[in-house]
Image (cartoon, rainbow, N blue to C red; front, top):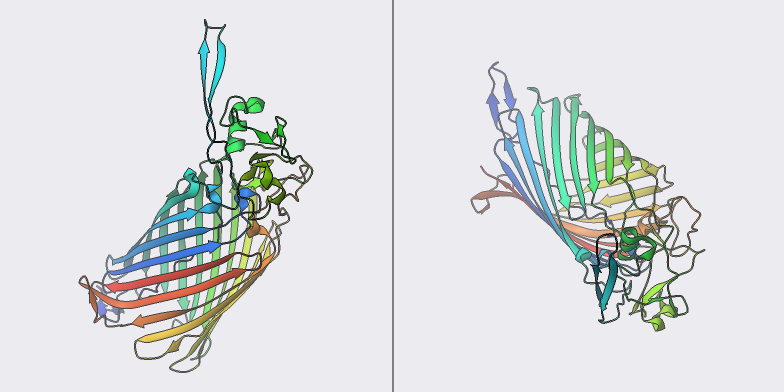
Length: 484
């Protein structure tokens, strides 16, 4: 499944204006006056023609519906506990082609005779000859899934509100991946809160459930005889000329022995109010990943090996086009990447208050990693206040990146290479994203819903298009409530 950035916006928690008196007799602002609740949801859909699961060609159709509930609870004047619970349900034509084969015969194996002198017999039950295509979704179990996640954050503020520390813990799980994370951070404010410096650190300990493409899974289970005693028993394998053959042997495939992926990050940020109209923020992250950084079900095809297929031979000549509706090419290997990766993004935000109705928000980022990917991002938002409560804002984002040194398109890798991928997320491309947002704000929360005061409602829509043909639409909707 393409790992495109599907982003739920987070509405900023509102600090209360009421004051309370602590035991020292000093008046201070309460961090959070009452419990607050965010309901967030997003819908994302995409299409393209460079599916990584089929080696860099084929449909990339994907849809995802995600929702989050975020509850912030004041424990006392200084401490806030926040829970973020999320659920995401998706369907993916791309990942469904982990097993693209429709139809096929079934077989079972029986043994007879005394122990040590047994005779093994394989019986094949004929059925519809199997076929598949990278240009259509299969009905496999991997066609969809659900991601569930929960994050708990505890934050403590000093009496003068110039020092904040926080700690958090997270859990997430989907059908083939699970993650556990812990982290924390420190924030210090200076110069009458005009200057802010923060540092954060996180550790994520993740684990894969290994899923290989069907043909490689069977080869891994049964070895060189997999065509006799496996899913493909009695199934015809074709060469590039459409002739039946038994020569397919994916000896370049190497199974993974480790399923772990660990990530360690440190983030630094600096924010400064320069004038009454201008604010800047500078940030930098350092992220180190170790372990299984490849996706085990993404196929790779080599230029210097013979190619083999299952399905209807007449579609082999048009295999790389959507005219192919009946044949699928068997993998030479799976994506294999280094077991470590260092990522370093550096960014800048610059916001300018033009007048009471218009604000300019800009963002820029440079990214580098030791896989050879370098990227630049620039975006701009222009919030326009059209009434006391309503704000609309158009937005635009531009992105460009270089290719990872391990990337090559369909059938362009060589079998002698140590690392290889045909995932177009690691290719060279540029992308544009443009859209708009509408924000409703009622700081006094006069509006009510299910007994909760509505402080903020926000809707965003964005269209994303990439130079390699991928396109997507993203819609997000959020409600911010207070219990007071």
